[in-house]
Length: 90
Image 1: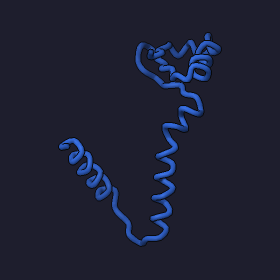
Image 2 (image 1 turned 90 degrees about the vertical axis):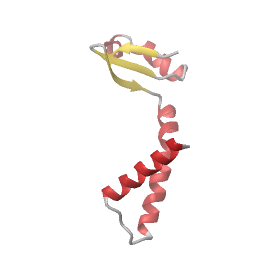
Image 3 (image 1 turned 30 degrees about the horizontal axis):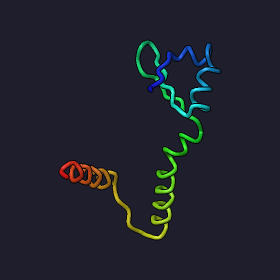
């Protein structure tokens, strides 16, 4: 179940939100003026989302240290777009 709350609940009902996020392990989506504003996650949930990216960035940094090859932003994004198109074609 999605938990959507107004951002004012962060101040007024923090214990309820904290319980949802920490004890129930579920994210809480906050809105401001009826529009999405932010998502609250536990540290564990956040780490689960970002750990793989952090590792990949560390590996890329190590590979860059061992190589003199550099790519422009245009080259990188062209390759990314091509890979996305290839995956969609599958």
